[in-house]
Amino acid sequence: MTPRTTENGRPAITALPDPPDLPPPLPEPTVANIRLETVLAALSDPLRLRIVRKLLLESEQFDHTCGWFDLDRPKSSLTHHFKALREAGITRQRQYGLERRSHVRIADLNARFPGLLDLVADWTPPER
Image 1 (cartoon, rainbow, N blue to C red):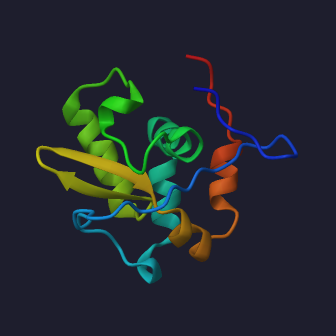
Image 2 (cartoon, helix red, strand yellow):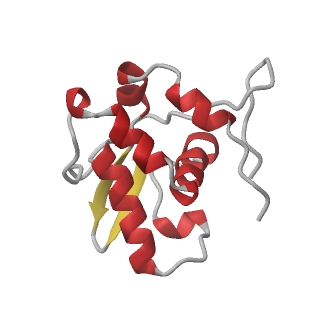
C-alpha cells in the first residue's frame, strides 16, 4: 500500500475513529507520564520506527495484529518490540482473544510532543 499524502506532498498521518465495543487497553502510561526520553529510546530502534511509521501512514483499520506488518522476525522478538512501544506510550494495545492489536496514540503524542509524529511520518526507511 502506498502511503497517503497531504496537499503539499508530505505523508498524511491516518487517525481512524474508535470503533464501538473495544476491549480495554493493556497497561500503558497516562498522557502526563509519557516521557520524551522514553519515546525517543523506543523509536531509536529502526524496526520499531518502521512499525510506528507504517501504522501512521498505512493503517487499513483501527488497529492491527503483528501479522499485518509482514515482518520476518520471531514472534518473541516482535512481542518485545510491541511491548516496548506500548510501555513508552507510543502505541495502545488491546487484547482480542488470543491476539493483540496495536495503533498509535496520535492524539496523546500530539498533545504531549507536537510535531514528533510528523517527523516519524517524514522519515524514509533505508532500503532493505
